[in-house]
Length: 176
Image (cartoon, rainbow, N blue to C red; front, side, top):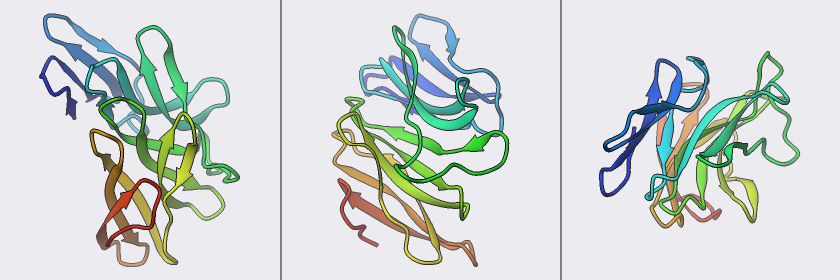
């Protein structure tokens, strides 16, 4: 699903496992198999950081996470003050893309009390910040620019399922 600008590293999902492939190397599987939750993976421009989604073994909550060779998985958690979904395992957030320098991860966060999704932007300095959801809509940030300043995604009408494109500059209001 993602490749570094020089083509030397590829990340993606295979059989419910996030993988990293490097030129001249073998495929490295980074997650256990989980078809329901690990369906996306993206990689930073230098190939050193992968963003994906998996169950956090400490609290058994599905969360967006980043991976590095030396540090393993770091879980990004939930939107502040928002509870995860009530099912087992509970769901908190899903990663969809990572910026080129790995400073920004975008995706969707679940509102467990309503089962509505809200696009998020995560940085190490600000943590996870919601990008909003109009009444009757869920949102998702699906992609982020290489420099991390602009995110793209959609708002989805919860009744009809129709999607409208959205663009966010930082954490500002979306363009539709």
